[in-house]
Length: 162
Image 1 (cartoon, rainbow, N blue to C red):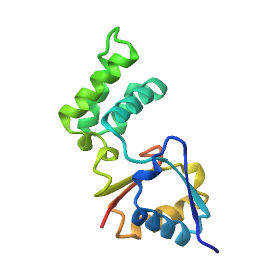
Image 2 (image 1 turned 45 degrees about the vertical axis):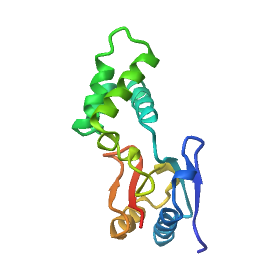
Image 3 (image 1 turned 60 degrees about the vertical axis):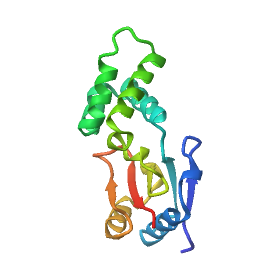
């Protein structure tokens, strides 16, 4: 089997993923007999995080988002829930302000310094051998955290940059 390939969705910022992290992901894909993957999300600004959280509250419901996030993120979801008659832009601005108040990397690791921590979401639909991918990711000491379905909608990997 040749080397696996990584693709990026239009919403993922390839420039925020260091070569070191790409090499780790390629190793995991290869060892787990997966041919490729699709990265759907990378580093985010506080505004991007607020916009994504707003959109997910709209699409999946705020209760689902409260379950997804820990306490810091739940505070941001509650801004959405208490928006009253605010429009989308105003609500996102308030959510972003709450993220900045709390500290963006406390709300989502996607907002961490991408020079120190690479955070990627990989579409589960792009992973053919899911159990192998999970097993190899958990074995790889270069990955500090893995979240995966059904707990998380994506394969969420956190890779400290050396």
